[in-house]
Length: 81
Image 1 (cartoon, rainbow, N blue to C red):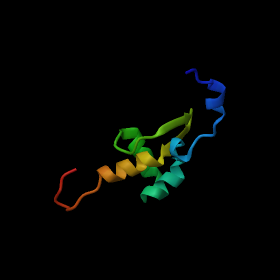
Image 2: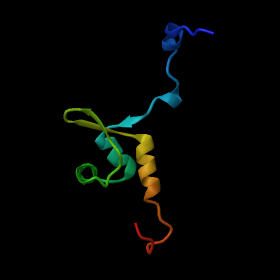
Image 3: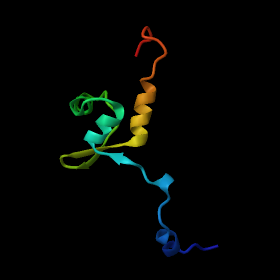
Image 4: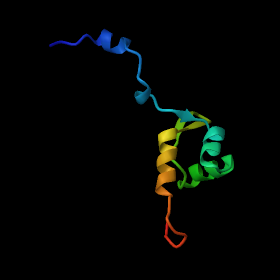
């Protein structure tokens, strides 16, 4: 059975296929950190994954922020990172 590619591309994307991208100010607020802390995390590589949107523009997928927060969750202050 042959599929018509025009039909497939004409369908609107579903909400599950679209990633929510937050700019640094909104991302910092979402994870309860300062925007400068997220910038340092990008620079040194310990922050959440980010997306280069342009030459001087970045964004954060909400799913990446959630994953980063989850991997930092601890049950006790004596647990190591």
